[in-house]
View 1 (cartoon, rainbow, N blue to C red):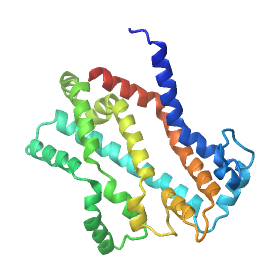
View 2 (view 1 turned 90 degrees about the vertical axis):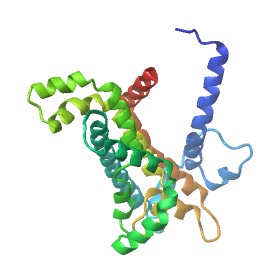
View 3 (view 1 turned 135 degrees about the vertical axis):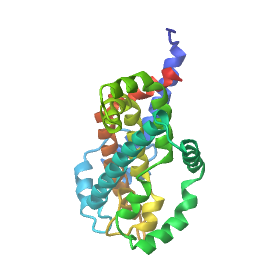
Length: 274
């Protein structure tokens, strides 16, 4: 193992400070009044008005912040569970099962990864109109229940992590394909599934454009509510925007804390295999 030099530590500390500065700045401004936003030099320590700012944010009847927070938690959770489930199922099938058209189907999935998501918004928007889903959460859930990237990621991981001998042994013990998936394959794929789950949850949580196109002010997501806060009629209450941003970060931190060990394990295992 190589011994890290002092210069390495300095570079790492600078990188960490730059990475956490936007988050720390959000919490600092959220705990102060509006005048702190324009101070030069900017304040670097938290104030004592976070609770008051939070109450003022929750009382804002235009942003519907709590509804947006609840909707984002629901939408992100459903999409994440669905993507992980379908990706592990399809990844297992492409990696370990033999069926006609497997290569052609895998090629189609890879091609979908090369097409920017935004290019499909216009036909998808027309489809949402025909289905009558505009303004409802189905419009931000159903189109994203399966992702080509997740299927390809699980297929590549299953190719190396799940030995053929393990599946053959399970078949000799009388296990069906579904039971092999549930009892043998899924536990083996758990580190990669945790990484995929975190990436999917973050992507869905941070998505702004599509919810802005298909939702309205009565059924917002958290990003929609933050957009309403940031567009005042004459002036913008930046403290409310930063307070909302700080509160919007909390669920992501809780997800990372809950699954951090498996996520880091999955990333480290992938880097070692690479």
